[in-house]
Image 1 (cartoon, rainbow, N blue to C red):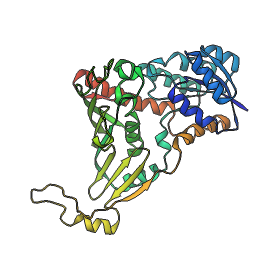
Image 2 (image 1 turned 60 degrees about the vertical axis):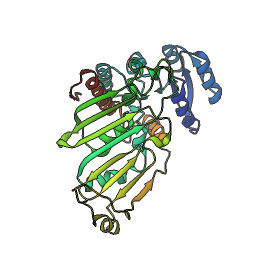
Image 3 (image 1 turned 90 degrees about the vertical axis):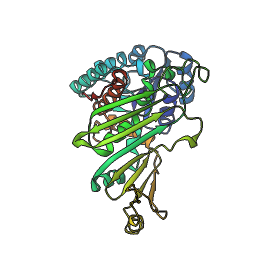
Image 4 (image 1 turned 180 degrees about the horizontal axis):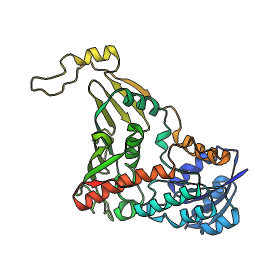
Length: 352
């Protein structure tokens, strides 16, 4: 039975542990965290394994066949290089790093070693993605309007942009990754503007990051997209977070990890919507009778994501992994280019 180890026993680590406890074909051998009590708590939950505070000592004692890295964004580097040196396949949570050159070097060494890797872009495993990609393939997209708005996570390091990367890099990277995955195109340039002042030190002491950012993205072939993301929300009614893919005669609303809705693709729907499409001033007007065709997510895509990596290690076949380290590096470079644009106030090329 293959042995699995974990580094990082916080909230995202617990998310993965919940999946591992459903698998009977792996041995949970070791749990590592800088806070020993947290690692020991995982041992208690797993009912097996050993707790460590030094990942090298854990590697020496447990000799794992695979490792899950669930650490904050600034903690990457030494762990990955040691796993590569020992030839241990690894799954790493996003973002891969806040240093694009570091992530690039890890990607190079992974390729050189021929190591099986995966990243925590679990949204790629949702069953709404195939029909979404079919729609995009059959309806040339004119523009994409994307957004993600929420509140502030309850983690101290998240409040500091130099530690988390900010919301675009640490959270909305899921939307950015899905834009690449669904469109099948790579971003070429980004122009990002940050907004602060909505959240004050009185509201949230120790808060030093962007409240909101807006990005204009140009993809291969000239397709444009706007991405707005904010952590200012105090109520779910404050914004409708989704990605709208608009073609010439229809559109698809994609709500991450939830559902997709198509408008104008059904013949009856199209006939109802076309009448009176253009208002007197030439602007778009939707018909009051417009109805969409909705398909909801019906799988545990996070479980599938973890299971796919584990199966790849067990079989030696990584072909079903939808986000390897190399591919996840491109999504990381994408979002970090946005951060550079916020700093320079200028458009930035996405360089891989």
